[in-house]
Length: 184
Image (cartoon, rainbow, N blue to C red; front, side):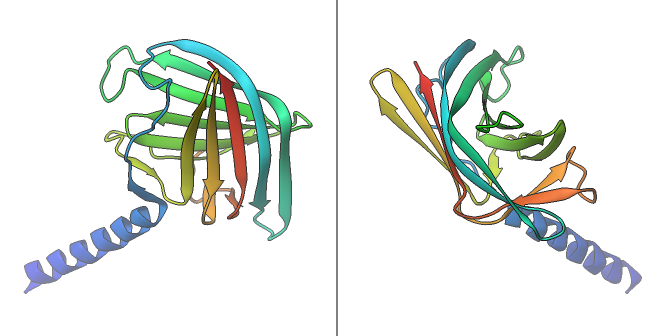
């Protein structure tokens, strides 16, 4: 009886952890980028859009990106485990005070906001690299000489300071959308 009870407790705890993880992630399906086959590279462009943030006290902050500088840095994976390279898209707000970083590797992604040197992040880039952030929709559109990466938040996404789950956090609210136009 004691053994059965221990198994039930373990299954319940595992189920709760799994359900929580499932709410922030979903299976990755890949990234349809023209830059996907590159091992290394550096490209520039612009970023546009807005991010609506909810702070821990419930207040909102709107970050605006209007033609600010953006870049894509492609860093070779020396071990070539799940992908040839890490793709790191970054940009800054119109004021230049806040920066974003969107990363892909394998079938996984990560999103970071740097506000005054403090990083808030959610990353699915881990040992499996097969999950993406649930609620962060991404779409690549190709045009002659440019690729557009459209990031749209379809649900509230929780980001943690320095990836500490029980530390300080903020949320990116739904309908936040940013577009990076990267020159090829």
